[in-house]
Length: 328
Ligand code: SF4
Figure (tube, rainbow, N blue to C red):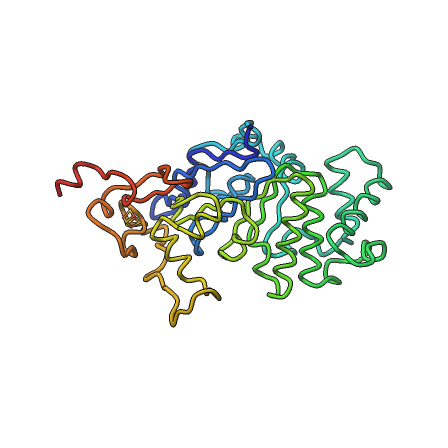
């Protein structure tokens, strides 16, 4: 089956006065129809830039410097801005961290929904309003027939994010990209929004790329997970396997830093150091300065993603390392 989204050897660069910085380096993954792919990593890992590149919104002078993005097999990374604008909203829905990024504070939410629906369909105004009402009902807005004429500021943060979900799904997209959709919300409503996102996308048949730093959200929602580090994928695989038996030392560190009710431990595992800056990505395996298992080839030779069990992992612990390194 053709994947909804295929990202092939994606490279994103930002030219600066000090030289060209590579933010995304050779990232590849697929998302199957109806699948939820979680993309996880610390701040600065390149998760959001990957999502932004997929929807064609990299801010110049940043640019896609290599690779391809395909939507249902059709290349979209090289489309003119006007065509890409039509794909965003119609075939790719978006949910960002701050609902006010997607909602215009000057317009009633009903107007914004109706405009979105009519931009991407041939529905009349009254039919679009009817659809907007049913979407608001579907996302759990109480009394939608009166709330439809309210302004965004008249909603709580959680309710605003529900409206954004309605907007994202208004044109029945094939793919929804949700970038930290609950980070700005109260803890009490985060789980509701995640459950709603998952249920609605399943009902509407949309695949999801869920970008988050929160492994708990991934565990609840995703079918597969891609763990990113320093602009690359360190490990990608089925979410259960990655959580139960992580392969990459960085993924093991991420999992060890999550509190567990099942196991008694005095201290959580901490990954020493921090994510490298774009100006100082280490050579070889970019995780080597922080890795407790680093050995001979790691500082020099870059490991590529290779199949291991039901996942793929970029780590020399799992692959024969270069012969030249063995001689060092
Ligand atoms: Fe650690 Fe080496 Fe594996 Fe990188 S390649 S994660 S440094 S063991």
